[in-house]
Amino acid sequence: MPSVYLDNNATTPLLPEVFEAMRPYFFDWFGNASSLYERGQRARAAVEAARRTVADLLGASPAEIVFNSGGTEGDNQAIFGLISPGDHIITSAIEHHAVLSACKRLEALGAAVTYLPVDGRGQVNPKDVRAALRQSTRLISVMMANNETGVVQPLEEIGQIAAEADVWFHTDAVQVAGKLPIEVARIRCDLLTISGHKLNGPQGIGAIYVRRGTPMQPLILGGAQEHNKRAGTENLPGIVGLGKAAEIASNWLANGGTDRMAELRDSFERAVHEQLECIQVLGLGSPRTPNTSEISFEGISGASLTVALDGRGISVSTGSACASSFGHPPYVLMAMGLKRSQAQAAVRFSLGKQTTKEDIDYVLGCLSDEVVRLRGMSPVWNTKNRLSESTQC
Ligand code: PLP
Image 1 (tube, rainbow, N blue to C red):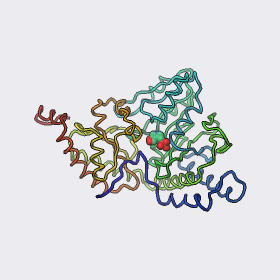
Image 2 (image 1 turned 180 degrees about the vertical axis):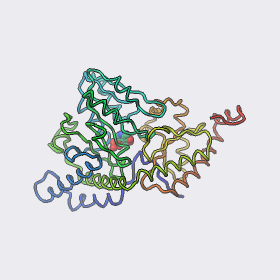
Image 3 (image 1 turned 180 degrees about the horizontal axis):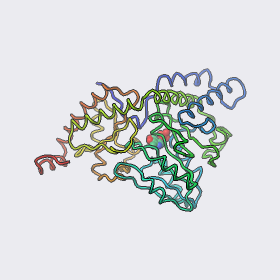
Image 4 (image 1 turned 60 degrees about the vertical axis):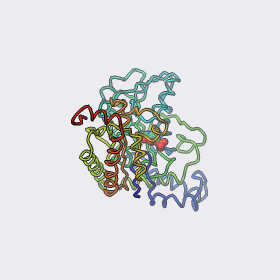
């Protein structure tokens, strides 16, 4: 049976070139980057080389890159590193839990938080950001693209508002880095989070861009690593891997990777539309990351379809990996105004750089079989069809 992995928003496969770049730093050159002898200096040079390629991916300067353990830490760092009780934060209702849970904790500690709504296409309205500003607002944190729908937020407008109001601006770019070009200067953000394992790098490594002069307090205290912004011995192989993944991603972006990926995703969505009635592509009409397609299949449960496709060797997910494993309601889709039944009928297909047309053709064949089979067993779908001659979606 073929095996097709379409859950690249949950995590991506490590590229062999990335693994090969990391290998010497597990064995021959395993030094501590703070040591003065050669092994340590080799490690230091490797960390600094990786810092340059990550900076290049974001249009930042190397001194503005701080390595950490990934997206969750970066989001927590940005929020806890700037906010004190009494401060006000503006964020959106569709952020990753790494942002939402940090905001909830700060609320309990006496900060105020505004959770902005999104429209039916999954976008925050910059006017709402402006209207939410208060005297006490210190931080705006709005993600660059959502992990479930791939919808890209109007960050340049939000960055402009933040700059005019003299408020710090953080964006979670975990789902964008390596898929769409990023220029921190265009967005005018002060902080930006990325994660290695979402761009074919290793798990457990990430980075936060901290614009020069941003008074971010460290989250983890100890040694003076990362210019006193993130204590702890550097994850040397991880950093080297993230650096290599960033370099490969920069080349992929420069060589038209985004358009090729979007074309494959769009051809998938067109074919699903042709094969099946009563489906809804979520976030359609908004700019989206090129790899993400979240589709609601009326009359069935997304979880059942996910299990059925798994039985055919296809990995997809219902919303975010974290949310589905903890049984949370699909809050991102509910925030977009979907009914609970529509939200629970959604499945996310997220393509990777390794995804081929043959993979997509295989998925399309299995998908229409399984949706038709599950609808055949669905009381909701069958009742509706008994009530009306032709199906009205
Ligand atoms: N932010 C977004 C938008 C994500 O999709 C994820 C992971 O799914 C994270 C943050 C957390 O990143 P990590 O898994 O590196 O902690």
